[in-house]
Image (cartoon, rainbow, N blue to C red; front, side, top):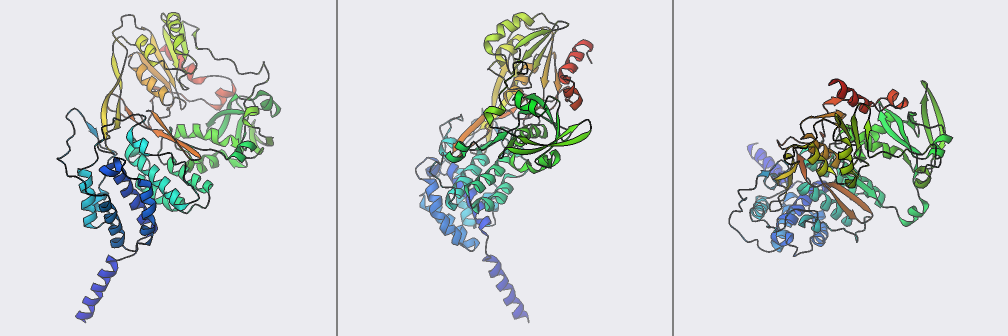
Length: 551
């Protein structure tokens, strides 16, 4: 009996040791190893080999591997084929550099269930003797140049889809500053996306799954634009609603007419409330689009969702309106972009926005989305003696104007933002940088109250600008949560699609984060459906009340 038991145990050990591994396990691990070697191995990172082609050559062998041992041996041999890695003295980080490690995790080099001890040792040796780039991080830095445009890839081919997925996943793994605050671990996103991308039957399926993967970044800078084919472009496949607006209380409320004649034909005006589009409630639309929209926070998500739900691939669209508490469904005709964004009536045309103006009670107002740098001297002269200036940051700046305005507001130079940027000598790690300062020694600085209006449209540079204005001291922020999307946007074009993501991390000088949090208002005010219908700007109204009462 004892002999039978020992034999059974030995059989189980052998069976377990040579257990079959799944395609997803093999490819997710290959993706991580391929990306690690792409950025760490001196020969690969130095551009001496065509690393994409090597992956395509190895994939058939990896596909045939049945056990951990077979798989691990393929990777070991692949590394050996690259030639020896020169052992160097321990690579020290210069004393003047302080690293930010929250995105960094190479623990899998030693803990992977699919690695032999020999393979782990090889990978660890490469990490310790990694490629040392002489290049500094920038919009054209080395890692992005190695991320080719891949215009020759055929996305109907499994190998091409694999290369594209591996390249994108590893770019984010090593060069996305906010990986550590994603809702979901990036490793898990790879495991979930990989079988769907690998098995995609058409280009459209591939693009759909890649877009879902990009949405996992929880970054409102992220966009994923698919270029239409020549036939689709000629057909002008998209149709648009003739107005835009906001989602409030799971209802869509019109705030701006884009095509007055079309809107008038369907009795659409500011304050019009919509509860369903194509027989789907706003609640359903909010839920079903989460997988394909990357947003830093809920306010930004709802803002980005508006553009998506107001586009249709058919011209006949069923829309349910809410009027005086009753629902009314209309079969609307939506039109192409040109017709749906054209105001024809002079009387109904969008009123031209003022760059700056003097409101009642000696209060100044500046629209950051309209004013340009050449207007700043006139703005300062006109508003310098006001008791308060309201800077409306509820849009994207029209020009690079933060410096002259912050100089006007501040009595002395103050730091308002510091950055983390990739430390290219150790991919995956970041370094703290000094950042930027606002203002200078200025006795003639503005002495009145400074009010900043913010909301979900306060995005990226608008948020950064708010940080610079806040240093003036006598500043109050009024409105609602901003987009939580600070830093530079890195744009990348591939064959038939374009995407982008944030390239550097932005923090307050005390290292408080801004990403996903945004600019936090001192006084929270959100527009209401009633306020929009009455034509009131409730955020501005609240600011004016605060200026007069201090409350």
